[in-house]
Image 1 (cartoon, one colour):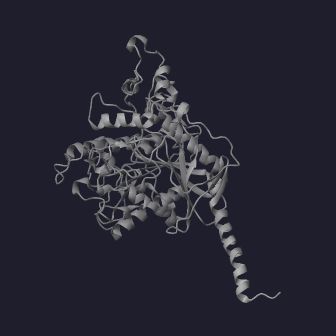
Image 2: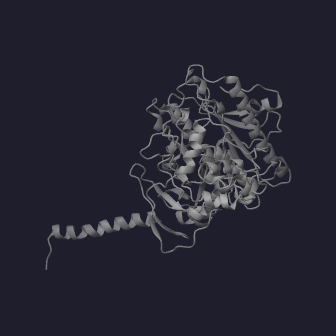
Image 3: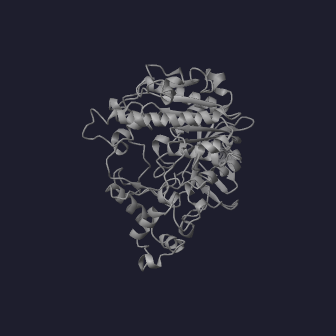
Length: 537
């Protein structure tokens, strides 16, 4: 039987469609040790594969609440679509007006479902089942040994943050660069991540840090399936995530997994506040129905009954109590953050460094010129003048000196070069008020290339694009070769603070220059009393 040309063409169509679907499926479906995951390609970013939600631990729910993250078992038969971002870990959305919940910084908070950014409630799109990571990878074939990997941990003061935070979604950068894999993670925060509860062992209080470590281990074991090189991971965090990365460099110095570190606006310091009586956790317990039934006379000494009771209280009730208490500025103030335990978080980092208990890996350390202008109380009644700059500058100096200390400690180790830069850019859509300067977090949309999210404030400028791309290119030179890449690509030398001029440092976005080399003493000299600090260079 003879078939017409049209019939032949129609018969050919399903085969073509199947072939295309098969090609896409093979690029987007990845088999890992804990399951098979199919991602997506967004038509706006056709050269970037995305897997938006891959679990890396057992859900820390019910009896697993406030336990160390548990590894997932091998699950070769599980197949999941990884096309929707996971819920963020439980966190409260404050109703108190600040810079961070106004339209001028829209996109710097987690996705909050149908709620607004001043709801005064636990985030709608949050869940205790939140231990997921997301992966962005080029569609092109990886190089012989795989792409280097950027492993990113969100900021948020250890109380907020997550993967689905628009300023920190790296699709634009991944599409432009096409030369690395970017991973971002959720980790437990606030009372769920750092409970400091009597009923837990002292080395089980920093659960959020342990979440981060397990996610890093999962990436080490599985990133090759996505085209990544597990021996070339840059461990990177911003703000609280940056402090976390520094914590890892000390806590896991003998087995860092990472080839390098990027500390973006945060380093760990000694002398952290402690609550040895576990009073904050017990205070919350008493106010959500978990007080001892006959008062102090029958209170359990080891806190086991208190902890068991608290595991029966909904995460929303706990989050809303803590958040509303804070919004009312009640006293005593409640705080749940990293807990010194001398196992994961140490009381004396200077001693640890002198003993060589710091990862001997290259580091990149960055900061903004006027970090604390955005962290001061929001001056809503005086937006022209802003907060008292002398107080802001004092805190800027303290931050600079902690970063200098972090650099000095690494200078004393072999094979631990440090590359430092200062972000000093000021742009219409990021700096509505002149007093802000280059504030804490203003570098984030520049690093990720998400500044376009602020075009409702003012249009992106050509110079802003130039600065952003220069920052990205310099970071990528470090990602690709953290020992020699920056020198080869840009003549950017590791900072050696003992040099007469304080060593080499970069400054981005100041005086109409995308990037310039400056002497380290220009920034760090204030710590030795030989220079004044300029928050508006």
